[in-house]
Image (cartoon, rainbow, N blue to C red; front, side, top):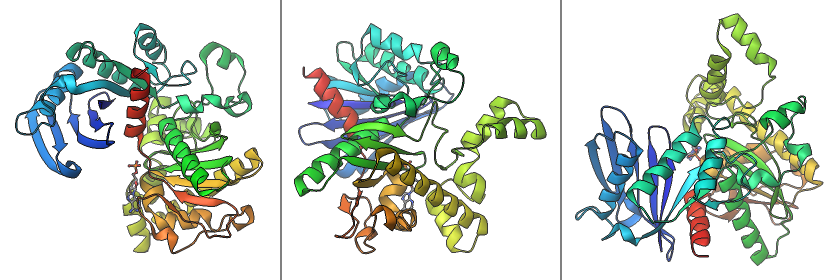
Length: 401
Ligand code: AMP
C-alpha cells in the first residue's frame, strides 16, 4: 500500500508518499505560502528523491495546496503514480492531542472534534493540522485518514511527572500539565532500539531518548512506556534549543516584560524565537554555524555550546535517578545523529553512571550504531529518527484492521 503522510502548518504543508511494501519514500515535497499572493510547490521524486519539480502558483487555501500535491503525484512527466486511487490512506501529523489521545486514531467526527477541543493547547498548529485533514477529505473523498499525535506517547507519564506545582484547580479547569512533544520520534526510536537491543542481547528496560534537533526533548522510557519527558504544556520547556530558551524561572517573563516594556505575549515570542543557541551565541540557531563560530574563537558561541551540553547532561542524570538506573541512552534527530563532538561532550563526566563512549565508534553520522565501549554499563546508540515512517506505519496498521 502507498501512504501519503501530511504535516500541515498554517501556511505550509510537507508531504511524503511512502511505499509500505519497501518502506521507500517515492516522492516528497513542500507547499509554501498557502493563502498568500504567490505560492510554491517543490516536489521531489525519482531515485533518492533527487529529481525536483517546482511550480510557482497561488494556493488560496490548504485544499488547493493538497490538490496541487495530488496533481504533481500523478503528473505525466514528474509524477510517481498513475492514479490517486493508488494512495491507500493518508496519515496526518497532529501536534496536540491533550489528554484525549493516548494513541493514533482513524479520523472521524469524534477525532476531529477532539482535535478542535485541543485548539487552546496548540493554538498555532492544531487548526492548521485540522485544515490539512479537511482538505484531504475534500479532494480525496473515501480515502481513510489517520491522525498521529505528537503528544500521545507521553500519555503514560504518572501524575507526579506531569503535574505542575500550581494550584490543582488549573489542571481541573484548564488541563494545565506537562504533555511533552516529539512523541512520534521518541516512540519510533525507543521501539527501534528495543528491537535492536533484543536481537543483540543488551538490557534495555530503562532508556533515555535524547531527541536533539532544532527543537529538542528528552524522554525517560521504562519497558517501552514514557515515564517522563522534558517538554511541557508547550514545547518551550526543557533543554536549550535552536531558538527556544528551555527552562527559565517563570518570573523572568514579568521581569523582562516590565523592564523592556513588552507584553507577556511578546516576551514569550522572544523565549520561543529569539533565545536558545541563537539568543546566546548571537550567531545562529543552527548547530553547525554555532560549532563553526566556536571553533573560530567566538566566546558567545562557546558559551551556547557549554549551556547546551550542560543542560542535556543534567536531564540524563535526573532521568537516571527517576528510573532508578539506566540501561540505554539513545541520540537522535539532526544534532543527535550528526554531531559527534556534541554527543561526546554530553556524555563526558557521566562515567559514574556507567556511560563510556568509544571515540572511534562515535565518529558515526546519521546511521544506527552502538557508540559506547564494550565495557560501558550503559549501551549508547545513535538511532536516526523517522517520524514520517512512524506515521505511515500507524496509518497502515489502523487502516488495515
Ligand atoms: P532537526 O530539527 O532534527 O532537523 O535538526 C536540525 C539541527 O541539526 C540543526 O541545528 C543542524 O545544525 C543540526 N545538524 C545537522 N547536521 C549536523 C552536523 N553535521 N553537525 C552538527 N549539527 C548538525
